Structure formats: C-alpha cells, structure tokens
Image (cartoon, rainbow, N blue to C red; front, side, top):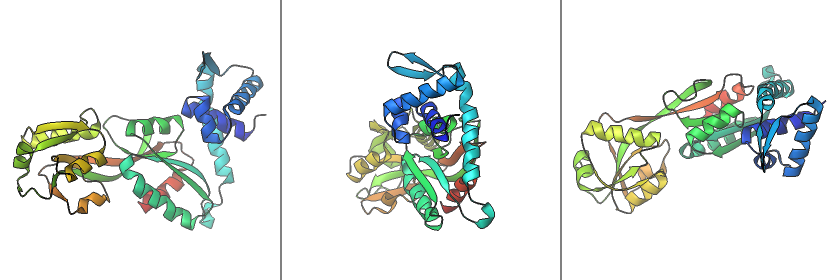
Length: 284
C-alpha cells in the first residue's frame, strides 16, 4: 500500500504540473519523484500519466485519482490535528497572496504561529489568476486575491477589505483638482489588460477625463516610484498598509465615486484547513 508520502508527491505533481516543480515542493530529487510515481502506477495497475517527450501530464485515470487523494490527505491531516477543544492548532498550511497583500499575510501568520508553535505556515506570492488556479488544483490551501466577477465559482470566498482608487501625484504639484491634474500631467497607467487596470479605466470614465498617457506598467511599486520621481501622475488602488501613502514626496488624492479593488480569500469548499485559515483571517 502506498505511503502518505507517495500520495503527497502525487498531489504535488498534480498541483505543480511537472515532476521538477513537484520535486522542489516535496524536497526530493526529480528522479525520486519519478520513481515514486512509477511505483504508484505499478501498485494501482494502471498508468496515471502521459509522457509527451520530456513532459509528463496526467491522463484520465490520473485526473480521476486527484480528488480521491486530496480527500485522503485531508482526512490524514484531520487525524493528526490536536483536539480542537484543547485550543491548539497544528499542521502544514500553504497560503498565497497577491504581492500587495503579502506583508499583512506574513504578519498574520507570524502572530498566529507565536501562539501555536506546531503550525507550519508557508506564504508565496503570485498574480490572482495563478493563485486561484493553484487553490483549485490543491497546490495552495487558501490565497488572498483580487476578486473578479465570475472567477472561481467552485471556491469558498471570504471578503476581506476594499482598496479605493486614488490619484497619486508628486508633492511638488500644487494643483488640487483631480481632473485638471489628469488632463495636464503625463499619466502612468496600470496595465489595462489586468483587472486593476480595468478598475482604473472605469474610474477615469466616471471622472469624464482622458489623460495624456506616458506609459503602461503592471507593477504598482514601479508606478509609485515613477510618480515619486516627478515623471507623472497615476490612478492606483490605495493599498492597505501601504508605506507610500504617507511618503512626504507624494500626494494621495481621494477621487469622487472611485472604483474599489476588492480583496478576498479563496479556498476549496472541502478544505481540511478551514479552521486554521479562519484563524489567519482574524489576524489580518
């Protein structure tokens, strides 16, 4: 009978999409991962992967096995977990967050771990769509993402907070009218193909203004740095806990009827780590 470790390796391969990425996740060599998967196929008496050149992907039998293995691993974690009545928490939880939410998430995990030393909490950063896919595939237990309408209907969602769009301008500019600033100053736009960029565009339409575009970027910190350097103005979400919000070289100007970027936590509905994740959320 396959060990829990082999099943964890299989779950990692399913979540990561390759033996190499799974090997890094479970701290094995790629050869060891391949050996475990061949042994699992032999025990189950059926192939689980299709080998396409050097690439290995799950076949129909492998995809069918994934939810069964996840349920078994979740049950195993529940067996290992201490009695909730004792008030202690333990286990390994894989968390993700968009870059802007990493700092508060790390602070929350450290606070929780200080009270529950047996907890092993890991945090990784990526774009929202990648994080959602990793949660759906089982690579992450939960993730803080920018929620978009219609995305992840199969997941359980917890609303966290909203970040309103604001006008960011160099302190040296004395003009206080947002529309005039946008019309007269070079505009640094957030990538309009991203959800945040679409919120920026809707905010501009509400203001009935068409700024003089200088360039497009998809990194908020880079935009902030360019504005700080005096190269233009921008409309960005007011990040929770952002240090630049109190930067003496910047002006953060509220906008009337501004769109809001909504941050939420996504996890699978059958998650075995829901109680721990809920405790993390309380720390945010």
